[in-house]
Image (cartoon, rainbow, N blue to C red; front, side):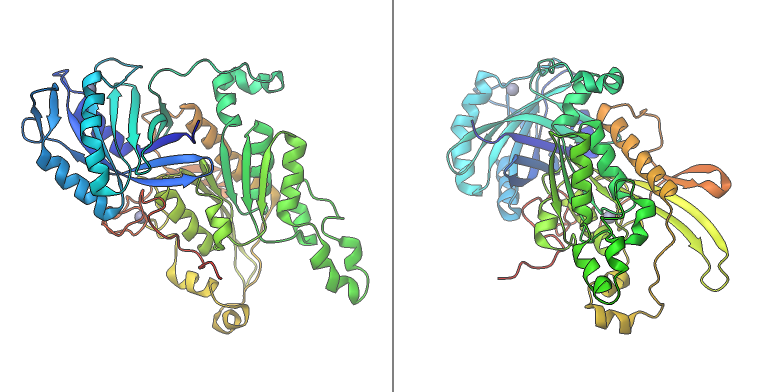
Length: 478
Ligand SMILES: [Zn+2]
Ligand SMILES: [Zn+2]
């Protein structure tokens, strides 16, 4: 058996498609999706990028052999677009029914007649999708002469909806260890967590509790990207760290100790690995001790099912925002802020932010959270940076209670999305917690701009491009 092929669609595209296909006339309708492709060791994922609706009786007409077919003109135009933009071409139509769907014999015969020629023209995968109201099947042809079916489709919206050709068999009973939580989200929810790969950028005061809790929940695979080692000043915020991890004793040795301690203290990825394994010995944990702008770090995240951003650099935000849009991976950015006046020491606002970012919602760039001047500063060498930094770079205040509160909030949102528990009527806002006012506010994010290079719809934007575009990372040397 080859690697599984899956499809990811953002909810905006899916709803436009669904409304076009399923109408009061109960008839068949059609469209074409141009999809980006991500190919990793986990499998191949197709990413819905553009949707072209076929107009009835103009682009989608009654034919001799089949019930209806797309006109040669419509197909020709879209296959040329997919060839030029390096997208997978997907012809879409609907059948009746609700939870099960499959291609008819007429459908399959038309694929056999048409797809070899389309493959020749495009040089990229081509295929078809057929939808029922709550089911999706696919027949994808690749230039190497193979055919693949789509095992699962994930629709990314306020909830993560999963579509299959037919209802999947009931999952195995969850480990009794997880009894209390599977009483909430069922054996299926627990099974889903076990088969999930979650990426975390940042392993500090927010990232460490995130990883610990993800592992406690039973998430099967975690990737953590964090370059630093444990320092004594981190200990009040890292529940799993010991004084030995920070080499507190060694630092007291005059001269040599101070010099050596930074090299011998435990790396934060190692600390997280230890905590994750204690929580769940079966977990697959990958710790990458480097900055997320390093190619190996960024590329380790592209086949994750969900991302958490728990680092506050603009570089990290930039890479996170690029990955969530280019690879259609939902994510949550977490930040806590204690504003203290540098001159007077007066405490101003205290806030905790939990921001959901999905391909059609909450882009960090469109919401003014990625500053190009900060990005430029962060990409400088340390010496150059000191000369250019006008304000002295002092560490920000940080307290365990605020960090873990935000980490918990982010994880709760993740569980609610995964299980489909978010109420459809809810404003899908950013959560802003303001403890000094004893208040939690929902902040409606700014809608994405058409010309945004991450979430936009212009030809050069990243959205859904998958492997067809470079990430904003350092170029691999050598
Ligand atoms: Zn059909
Ligand atoms: Zn944007």
